Length: 274
Figure 1: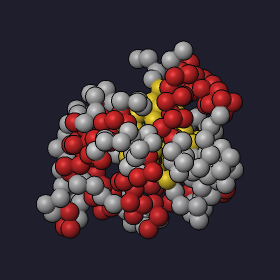
Figure 2: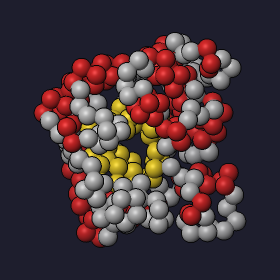
Figure 3: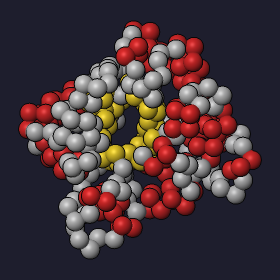
Figure 4: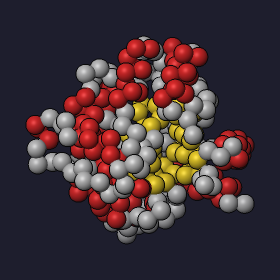
């Protein structure tokens, strides 16, 4: 199977984008469809802050073309509040919330760890081992949801049970820059996120899975600075190197403050189309 580049934005609901990226007159309800016509993938980040309603996942799936892929950010309740401990029910609740309705359009699940969570080999090994690797495994896990999810669940499969689920982890503590962490990721076939954070957090540009995942938060100023031609050329080379090695590449621009993300994503897409 030919490796594919999935280039897009992290989230799509940003008021400052209205009248800029989103033309005046585009309804908020139509913003996803508009954005999906201009990028090749979108990272859902609302799922990081709260469990989404089952109807949301179905609506998002139906608003984009059939080959469009969503990456999905795992809940901060797992990563930041529970800090990866005692998470069987929270993981079950997440997969029971409707995300499996995306079916084959579900791309990697992103797990962003907090900057004050240091590397703990046992904790991380156990976490990676718990992650479901197929839609069937995720549905089985979802059955262990807790009672508060009653009436809010939807985990009927929209893809074959053996359809794979990929996972990627973004770390923000310097103690993760170790061969032990790299080996753990490699052993669990989980991608190490290459994060461009203007030097604020570690940049671990490792290949630990059969796909690559990058989050571009800004190369000079976090969440604010755009990418000039030189910067985009570097990321074009990064994507092409992974594609040449047979790996899918997922790249999401998260420099949203000054409405740079969608334009930078479109510029990278245009470069890769040459």
